Image (cartoon, rainbow, N blue to C red):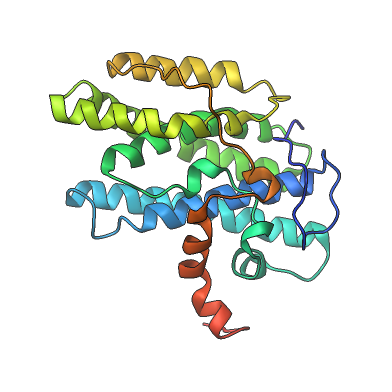
Length: 252
């Protein structure tokens, strides 16, 4: 099983070996949890009702993956933590999500470009993990792969629609690509799983159809996998966790 490698576990986490698959699964859960929260912020705020419903459904898909992975991680680590503990009881430095996913939604172009970049990565990830010897992980990945195929179709179609649309939509789409490109190297990290070439081909093809330029930006931001985040994650977690933090042990 060639999980994305996670190293440098932040203070407060159990000591992890760089190749520890438990840390990798937790990082994947964090990815989907943070993105679900970001997409959920569009509810009742999207450009039209159809997009509002689509973003809500995509958010629920990511939330479902996060819940399943958190539950499995809790069972594997044997420390008595459940999905709520892992999602709501950890601090910013203990989260290992990609920096890309915690970035603010911005305008609709920023949201769909962020989604495209992540969807193209998850296509390879879930294909890989669906062959895991851990049957629970394999089952989660197989279901997630079907959802990601839809997510990619949706995000790619919107990026093309905006990029190859009006002068204003093209400008906004290109601005989104330029702003978010600096977070894309972290998607594949050291790329021991070999995801980067497929990711570049897929994203490059969509951007070409959208008449959008690949940025020539050597500056890349990393650190999320090590628990080092942008200023945005703390605000997002404060909003997401306030109920559980205010009333520990709350049961619905």
